[in-house]
Each structure stands twice: as C-alpha cells, then as structure tokens.
Image (cartoon, rainbow, N blue to C red):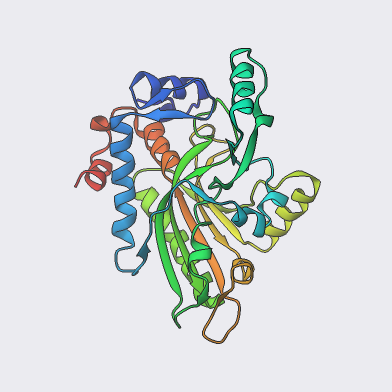
Amino acid sequence: MSSASSGTYDTTEFYEGLVRHGLIVPVRVQGAFGRGAVFEDVLERFNALITQISRDDGAELYTFPPVIDRTIIERTDYLDSFPHLAGTVFSFMGKDREAKQLSDRVHAGEPWGDLQGITDVCLNPAACYPVYPVIRGTLPERGRLITMTNWVYRHEPSPEPTRMQSFRVREFVRAGHPDAVVAWRDQWLERGLGLLKELGLPARSDVASDPFFGRKGRMLAEGQRAQKLKFEVLVPVISEENPTAVCSFNYHHDHFGRVFEIHTPANEAAHTACLGFGLERCVMALFRHHGFVPADWPAAVRARLWP
C-alpha cells in the first residue's frame, strides 16, 4: 500500500518504493531513469486505453524521432519563452588536431564543450512540435487530427520522480477552424478527466500556464491564464497541496498556422490545439494511489487495464 493511501505523501519514500519494486532503475543523472517491465506494461496498457477512447475520431497516426529540426524552436520563439528548458544537440566537427585536444581534455577532466559545434537538430521539447511543418498548406474543410507518442526533453534535473528530463507524451493535435478546434479541446478535457477517474484517481482540472522564463514570462503566464488557453488535469502524486499535472490541453489560436503556413480552405491561418497525456506521470499516479504491486490494485482498475 502506498503512503498516499493513508493520506500522507513522502517524495523520498515514493521514489525509493518505485526503485525497490523494480519499477524504475536509477542512473547517475537526476531526472533520468530506466523503466522496469512492470512499469512499461502499465504504461502501454494506459496508452492503449487512450487509443480505445479515440478510435472513432479518425486521427492520423505518426511516429517521430526524439530529435527535430532545430529551426522549429527558432521559428516558434521557443527560445524566447523557454531558454532554460531547451536541449540542443552538439557534435564534434573537427579534424585530427582537434580530436586530440578533445581526448586530452576529457582524460584530464577538463571542459571540452567548446570543441563541438551545434548541429541541425535539437531534442524535441514539446510533443506537438514535429507535426506543424508536416501539415503545411491548405487543410481539408474538416481540418486534420494527428496522434503520436513522442519522447520529450526538458532541462529540469530534479530528484523528484515526476520531474523528468526525458519522458513520453501521448499527443493529439487538431488543426482547423477556431470553433471546431476549441470544441475538440474541451471535449478531450472531459474525456481525460473521465478516464483517470475510472482508474480510481482523484483527478481534477484547472486553468494553467506554461513555465515561461523570467520577468517577461510571468506576464505571459498571466495572459495565458486570463485567456484560459491552457488547462491541466491534476492528481496528487508528490503532495496534496501541489498536485501533479498529468495531462495538458492547449489552444494556440493561429500562432502555428501563421508560422508554418497552415491554412483553412478559405485561405485563413488555421487555428490549432493540442493535448497530451504525460504517460510516465499517469503511471506514477496509479502506483502512488493503488500501491506498487498491480496485482493488488482494485478490481475495477485492473478490469480496465487488463480486460
């Protein structure tokens, strides 16, 4: 039985319980860990439930690598809003002399990053980002709906288990007319809440904002909240007072439509919305509230995940 079952939350105890039961595998770096077989089984079954719920929506299925074209984060102003989260990819581009310098510095325990150069790719910071360049052009009258499960990277090293540097998101992206896009987002907010509650989790939704950087970022966050552009589904995993966001539902207006030249049949910039289930966080919420051994979970929860 997890500590949350008795109404208490202890971050260290929860992390150690995940490790002790082989659910996660520690590595040296904070915010990164391996996943054991049981953890992966629950994650895949939860993701399959999302597929089941959305089976009649007609979403196109895509698969993308964990790296994207670096110009995407440059064109979308990601580096203006979230420079602290970005992960760019550097590689060695020198010749023999520079290679010798690199080796010498590494073996001497000295800094060597300046001997590498930036590449054309970066780690994907948002699960929806690879989609927008792909759907450039004129949309069908009913718009487009795309789904994928993407690895996401954010530079947030932390010993707290739900604060990961690398994690998976089951994502949906809707592009089209404003009314249809907003209605779709709101429909999925109810779907997400319903799914988590069916699995015995004390989920609730709330208006939210992204972790914008700096003083300007605080103003952006206030505007985002005021316009209700972002909602999150929250579940107590680490604390009751500061519940963990396990799902996010976002409306972008025509921002990506303008940047990536995505148009409606009327030649207007398309509006977009996205929603994402943080798969690792959803799974951790299940372990937090039902215990570390799935065989002991409530029958109704097991019936949904292991039909």
